[in-house]
Length: 253
Image (tube, rainbow, N blue to C red):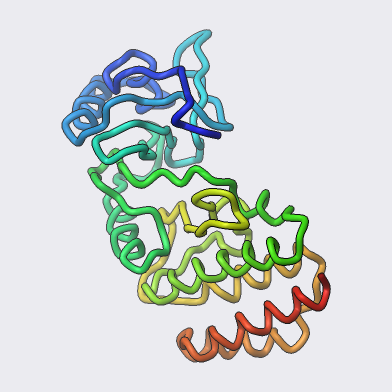
């Protein structure tokens, strides 16, 4: 997906945009969401992405993502291209404020997209336009694969340094995104709505999942990953883990 080339777009207060921001059920406060977005600097909602939502009978639009608690759309803004996360109107979550706070904390260490605006219903944040980890692992060259894995593990470690534990990184395929071509770019972690704070342990989750996906036996790395988590995720053990992962990938490559 290349949001800058998306031709289907309209202002936040446009009828389809308002409906997408208030998916799945429109209510009297929906227009206010759109007005707040405009005041926060969002200029146009871009209907691009791999997910689809029915915004009104017979009208389907493309969005970046659709989950149980929120919908994510691309947008242009005074900050450049952004992602707008909108709380679903049928969500059990009462607010996105906690997630926005975790994002602010994690983005300071380069682990996540950075938010520009947030309230109970909306988060405006950096748009990560590259592919997810699950697609990026299909790199064909050994060096490209090593870069992809290293960046994914580095993103997990950055999250550990912020003491934020992502509950879904045991299956990180859609929760780690690349900022561009995966063999050249940085990886960031998304979807922190269920994350825990003051805990670490993301690196063992991501390393374990990747090696299992590649059908590689982690061997002695298991013990090092366990010690990393049990000892509070120290940088010394992280460096050891990264070197061991690199050696394993070179060996099987």
